[in-house]
Length: 453
Image (cartoon, rainbow, N blue to C red):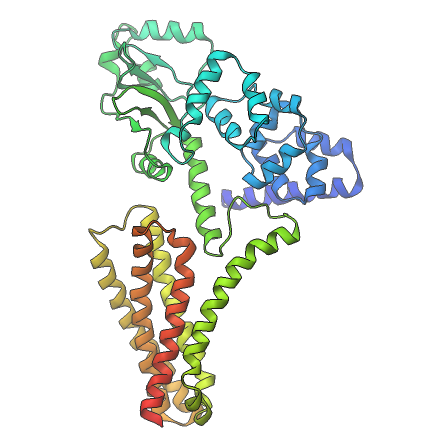
């Protein structure tokens, strides 16, 4: 059985078990179960419960793991949990967090709560965190951890091992040590495998990998994720403009970015925010969705306006009203396929001005091939259905026109929106639907008006 299926069943079983305990009022069983889970599992359960049930679960969670849970739930769910949290418990929740997780949590805290938490931290650590808080969440600077192990190139591996033994531990997800000069400029990295397999007398300078390049702190989180995937990295140093080491990014941070990007793409296509609480109050959810429904209503009226131009034609040939949804629907599906492909390409930086023309030509060619294929099929069906060969041919011609236009729109709309700084996943679908509906109706009813009346 695939691991993803096993994990899904495990999460479903946990949620079922929790809801059964809640319904039965079994507080002891709930406490024992929650205390046995990983923070990520508890976070998933909290997001899957309504607000009243969520409060009961949150009440049995020890402060020592609250911080790890808060950074794993959506923003809106996290804000709700913060309102349920005693301030003393929240301060305790920050004590065991690593620097990057601490920064994530601090970003979510409102004033004056943020000031209270910062006051509880030591001066040195507070200065480090205040510096990290100045970076945008969606950049390498916002992702990086300040917990790094640095060594000098003139040290021997034996000295490095003694240093690590004396230190007594390493930051989580450490797969290499970062080599810097006396001014903290990045020189390279020493992997733990090279540290353990080379002779103890070997100098760090002779064992380190000098090919490693630091990630600029201004690089976007999406670019960082792509870089990790392309180079198959587990961690990477983050540097300032002058090459000075600032921190490091680990694979767990990148996994979070990938998940956020996936959630954003899916939710944006429906005009929703991935950080919204699934169990938010009814009126709150209704108000948010009303805006997007209003936008779609305007586009629907536009398509209806196109149909209204051919009212006389529809009164003369009723069969047109039966067949015209076919043209619009086929165009919408074909355009959505292209749109999804291009939006993904833009997200992965596989589509740019360098290859946009070739992609457009390819998608138009696909539209022509599929247009003629399905136009032939629907022409035959419509001709037999209504015993009218001319009607079938016009339907086929309109479908070819709409599928080609859908390919052009599906390829060009996201690229244009991206150039304008507008999220193509958010606005692309509405624009595409408007184009394919209007062109589909216009082509079919226009051809019918010209040739059948």
